[in-house]
Image (cartoon, rainbow, N blue to C red; front, side, top):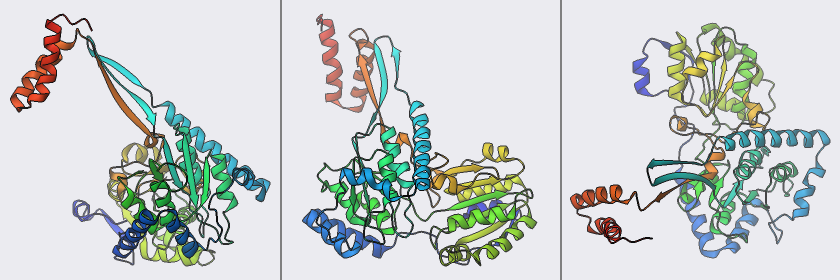
Length: 443
């Protein structure tokens, strides 16, 4: 995450970098080699069908079984491999995510209005009919992904939701990921990874019609496959490396701030982490604390490069400058740890999801405990887009109903406009109805 050159000019002298990213490269960018490879794979799978899917499953994931689908019994029994504590934690996350999604659904109501006597218009929220969810299960099996995709789609009323996950380190489906999908109401589960999974769902190669939408996080190849499949199917959003940003002042705890920054840096070696603070002392303390924590962090080989190459700490002279800087970054996750969190909450406009107060941390949402969705825009996408929610799975379909009595006002105006535009066929649709009305048509 980098500030725009325009903003830097506007705020000259009002901030200072205490730690700048070591790398000049953007945290995420479309790799032409990845794009080319994905294009080749999608073309081959579309041409050769499920045989190509199985070839890639064998060659890329080491899957050598004749069937890629898990039985309903295996899906239901997936939780048996987990400890009671792990099952309870996943059940809590699924329940809280579903409750929050139900709240969102309740706020989306069908509506109707009579714009003029005899002219009634309205809209209905209708769910898409099928969704394919990709559930990451590589080095870090992200179990809450199913809550945010499968569960939210089901809360929206989607009839059919299928899920794909790559085989884990032991060559089998990760039981915690499968159990999370089961808790979320998944209909079918397939052990398929990467591009071949998205292609199989989108091309209708899994014994189902092609899905209407594909959702879920993944690596660069998954993101590129979604980019190339968009239009053929809908997608949730194009997400890059996970991001975190924090606004903090002199009241914040540098140990907690540093821990929260590294918590998201742990997602990948190119995951940006940014602190904007109105306290120079706090900023310097966080830099020192992050280095200290990295020295004993088990995932230092991931979080260390991310913090070194894409981490930043910026001092802002006042809270207005802090808001301007952060709105320019438009981070995926934004934490507020200040003496006046309400001011920042009311003032900020560009972020995927906001975490207010010392006791909030992104990890609570990442693991499903906070109930909110963690499928969020990255790379500045929060300037114009929101994260995945119930509304993404719903189509607000409009309708109109016109009575005979309302026809003259509408038809005469359409005749006039169509005549000016030279659209004779449009004009005729109105003129014919006026003629029927004058002839006393009782229909």
